[in-house]
Image 1 (tube, rainbow, N blue to C red):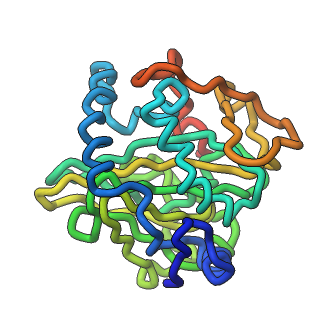
Image 2: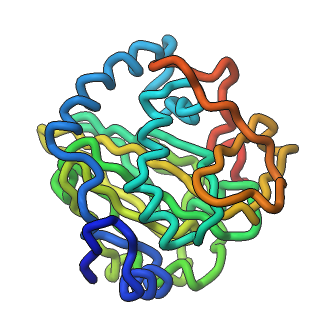
Length: 272
């Protein structure tokens, strides 16, 4: 993998690699081990807001009501990385925890993020921030390089009861899992991937937790379909919103909070 500059700004080599392969790894840490320990120490305060019957995957868009998450989404080091992909004008619109506890059977089938999202055009990047050390042993993500260049592939209803997604790529889709890259990161590090890149993850049979926060960013030219996701809000990160396609959210003021409404899930927004 190409190396990064100390300022978290992507080099031309890194930008080329991302656009050809649909992902970036080997990035400089966003948070030190001590800083991540502090963020992990606060995480139970957020988990305490979950209602009976909810799981950690229901922590979606809580950055709209929690400065704890909003400050992570707006971390200048992360924004420097994202700007290298999306350019000077972009916004944040989603965040979601993916936590696999030790010995979890939960999997994520092969899929493309953009298949779920009622948004166009495709100009979005996901930041996956590791809250724990993640690797093959505890079910870290795998991604198929270059798969973002093949367009959007038809998905089907998943028959795997352990999959956290109800839609995944149809059998016979023209991609090879053998070429998948295994993501490995230390706590405080992050990866970037394109919204069309095919990715997924296995179960966590280890004795270690595997927790990560996904943060979604899009160029200001990307418009959401409010008839599908009426509670969609954007938070401008850099530059100007010259298009003004989407409703603008108000930054939170409390440390821990959750939306009064339940955000539209991937399953609800996705095509069946």
